[in-house]
Length: 189
Image 1 (cartoon, rainbow, N blue to C red):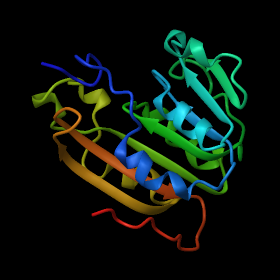
Image 2 (image 1 turned 90 degrees about the vertical axis):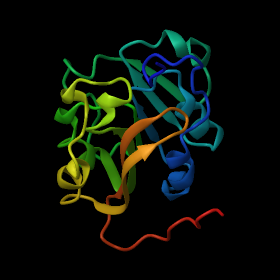
Image 3 (image 1 turned 180 degrees about the horizontal axis):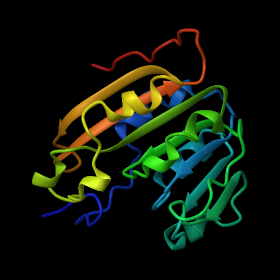
Image 4 (image 1 turned 90 degrees about the horizontal axis):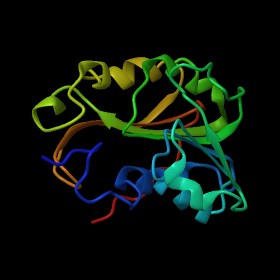
């Protein structure tokens, strides 16, 4: 059975969730792509004119980005090393298909004022559909809201089953480091 970590055909297009809310990240602001994988979101934000830091334990799949203007590649084990990013470093943080709860406390402070966190990953129930199955890598209902909602303004949140690109139970959040309401992107028909 195909799963996100062992796909039959790798996903190369940016996530629809990330595409929908990408415009909330201040133009030209630096973006952090946590556990960047093949770099689909690194490429997308670099193309939009953002300087991007692509961080992952294995950077072999983004070797083609080495030396590209505006892209910094950081090979780091984010699960054993200290959080390597300074407070207020990024206008946007992107996290997809990755969960390490120890980072929750550092994320809000790593954003600049007005910065945006765009995150989506797997949730409980996914074990019936594919990988990951380990409960350590599956969010409990409302977990992202509870972990981030007190320190960031939640703009959007979803939890449910998606069918595409592969069946999965997902939890998603968009949160901003500011108190004032943000202008939401229009819903596409």
